[in-house]
Image (cartoon, rainbow, N blue to C red; front, side, top):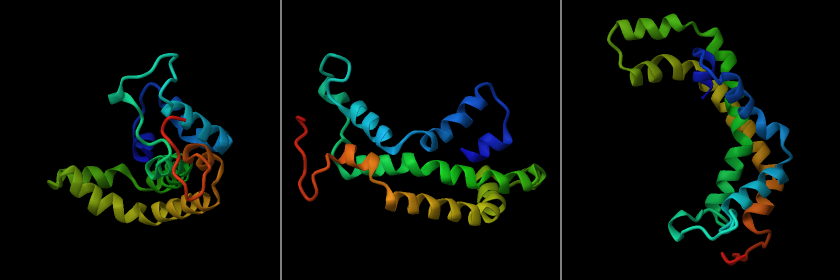
Length: 151
């Protein structure tokens, strides 16, 4: 995501850039409440078909999704500074020498951005450790007791 925002100019780029920062602007309890509502069976004034019901509500997968939502901006915002310093000519040179996109990523980009990605993950992990607002809503706030899916 960070690579696309740095390397390409496209319509809606400003909106995509603003959406990355959305978890910074929202209180985490609001994010959890909206995730819970999005997963609710009757959110459109009518029951959804069984196949389209969200399976992540009150599950570890839902908690993981909420924590990824609130931690993603830390990772995405730590990488662009490194990518801006790394010239696109290195990627072009790798392509000219016959490297595939995967090889270019693995041998040119990844070594350069690894410290920034690790820093972003450390910040996201630290926020996830202290996070309770979104987790309270998506998990059902019942420690050691699973919640009924009928709620």
